[in-house]
Structure formats: structure tokens, C-alpha cells
Image 1: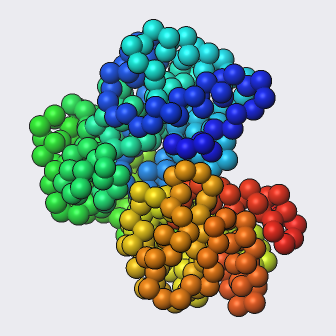
Image 2: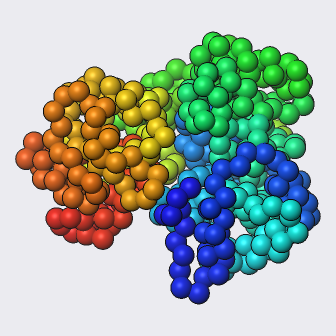
Amino acid sequence: MNERDIDVRDGAWHRAWLASLIQHGVKLGLQNIRALTARLDYPHRQLRCVHVAGTNGKGSTCAFLDTMFQAADLRVGRYTSPHIHDVTERIQINGVPIPETALSETMERVRVAADHLPHPPTFFEALTAAAFDWFAREKVDLAVIETGLGGRFDATSVLEHPVLSIITGIALEHTRHLGTTLQAIAMEKAGILRAKIPCLVGDCPLEAASVIEARAAAVGSPLSLVGRDIHVAPEGNFWHPAARVWIDGHEYQSPPLPLPGIHQAWNAGLAISAAHRLRRALGISVSPERLIEALAHTRWPGRLEKVWDDPPVYLDAAHNPQGIGAILPALENSIVVISVAADKDARAMASLIESVPCEVVVTAFQGSRAMPAEQLTGYFTRPLSGIFPQVQAALGHSMDLARSRSCRLVALGSIYAIAEVRALLAADGPSGPGNV
């Protein structure tokens, strides 16, 4: 977390209280969240939840699930992180962020509950408790819950009996907290597995899949693996992907997906498989085909999201090598604006970007978590098209370059960076009227 994680507005005590929790940083463990939810009368136990973990693709998979279950006329809560512009984006019902009045009322309940804890909650613990509390009070039919960090000791793992668990995939990430090997990270993600609760697992390296399989056997979680029990065939092209899915003797075909990237076909394939498995458990009478057709209307900002026309500007929250690798076709013959957090594998990310023909502009987003532009520059081996300490100057220069080259501009590397770009363009941009 850093200082832009929450907008502290004049008179908004609940936002000020949330902001005060950022100082506690990341504290993995379930003691606090268990005590907090107990004080709130266990709201998570009143919910039917799908619990989603994984290195990449969690948010997109949650967005696909949300869209499909809304098409079944369910009232769907969705809890994801981080946000792009405002903390209310993290807690939504049927795609609408929690209203400010509801956020205030819910955070008051959480604050009072937190007063009885031996240690203050973290920012994420407080928001997780708030999401569960609001969803329970609003009596949602289903809550789609994304883990924040890892799984085993993530605050969302207070969930004891989700209706389904999903692990989207495994790659190296947050190694300071989760471990330095795929096996160690897989064990952390597998911490969401529960006895007798089925789990779907996306495409994973063999060494990670074997760890998840062993953990599933140990806890008694029925496991279905993509590539073994579920088969997904990406179709279409990079900009207009689709997914064909085979599961339990059934075959499903998605429409063209509104989220570019072949990786989104894999995410949609997992979501389709989840919907197939959950229709009976959730009492859904709507046909699978109708649910799948709804995927064409999925929105998930910041995932190769086009926010400007002249020049074409795309934003992507790719913040690790796997994420960069998934969008390489979009970077070819483009202007790439990159800003990363200081704890990311910038060397590997730079190497991947340099594997395709593109012009690179390096910058740094606002906040203490950002890697300085000069440091990031050192990871690139070929000449750069610009080095700027701030995003606004980098964006203006890059847009001029993109216009002169008649090519697209792609901003990536951190959700904090793309939030700055998005805000600048929404406020009329560095050089013209906005169309975000």
C-alpha cells in the first residue's frame, strides 16, 4: 500500500481511518481477520462465495464470473484489489461500487469491531471485513472474492466454506512474502483449498501443479486441472480472443471476448468451467449458453483498455514478467510507457519488452513504492525514447511520438501508473480533449 491507495476527503472520517491503517503494511495471518469478523457476527458465513487465487488473471476471471452470474439474474458481490481510482471500486454489487454512505456506515461497524482487537487491522483486513459485512447486509446471492496476497494467510482465507475455489495460475511474485520458488508460491495459493469444496486450477507449471494436487489430496478437496480434467482451446486472435471449453463431457463456445489477449481466453475458460459446475449448486435455471453469451459484455478496466483514439492509447496493469509476456503482441511497433514498483522484477520485464520491436519511454508513478526512472532505465540494454521522472511529462512526449509514428501507445507496469495516465486523459490529457 502507499499514499495513493485511498482518497482522504475533507470530513470523510471513514476514509481517514482507512488511510491511517496503511502504516501497518502487509501482515499475513488470520488471527486479526478472524477476531474482526467474529465481532461483526461472522458475515462471511452468511455468504455463498467463489474464492479466487492465483498469480495473474484473478481479476479478469472474477469479472467474467460476475458477468455470467448476473446474467442468471443473481445479485452478485465482487471484491477485488487493488483499485484504479477509488477504493470503492474494490467492493461492488452487480458492477456498481459501494456508495459512499454505505462505505461510511460499514466502516463504522468495522472500526467499532476493531477497537476490541489486540492489534489494529491492516488496510486490507479492514476492507475485507467491510466487503463481507456489506455483502451479507445486502443479501447478495453470490460473492466473488479475490485474494489479495497469496492465499494461505491472506485475509480472505477466513472463508471456511466457499462453494468453489479457483487458482488461476502460478508464477513467481511477491517473493519476499510468498517464497522464492514456484513450489513455495503454489503452496501459499493452495491455502484456499477446503475439505469437500471443489477447486478448479488453471494452466500451471508441472512443479506448481504437483504441489496443489498434493495439498488437495491432503485436505480432501476435489481438484479439476486445466489440461487434465478441463480442456480450453483459445480461438480468434489476440485482439478478439474466444474460448472453446470441454468439461464433464460438455462443450462450450464463448463469444468474442471484449478483453484483448489470448490469456483472456484461458481466464474465460476457467470462468465458464466454474459456471458449468455451479449451476446446480446455485439453483440456476438459465441455460449455460445464455450465461456464456453474457461474456461479450464483460468490463475490466486497465486490461488492454483503450482510453484514447488519437493516438490509440491502451492501458494494461501488467506488473510482472508473466503479465508482460501475455501482452507482447500489443507492444509490437508501439510506443511503450513503463513505470514499475520498486519490488518488481524489472530486469526480466525489460528483457521481454526488448524482445519485440517497440520504442520505450521510462517514467515513475507518484508514491514511495515507485522505482525511480533512472533505476528502471538501467535494466534496458537498447536506447530509450525518453526518460521522465513523472508520468505527465512521459505521457505528453509519448503521445507526440505515437502520433508522429502513426502507432499505438501502451502504458503498463503498475496499476498506479495506469491510474495516473487514465486520470490525466480523463482531465483532458496533456494535449487535447479527453475521451476516457
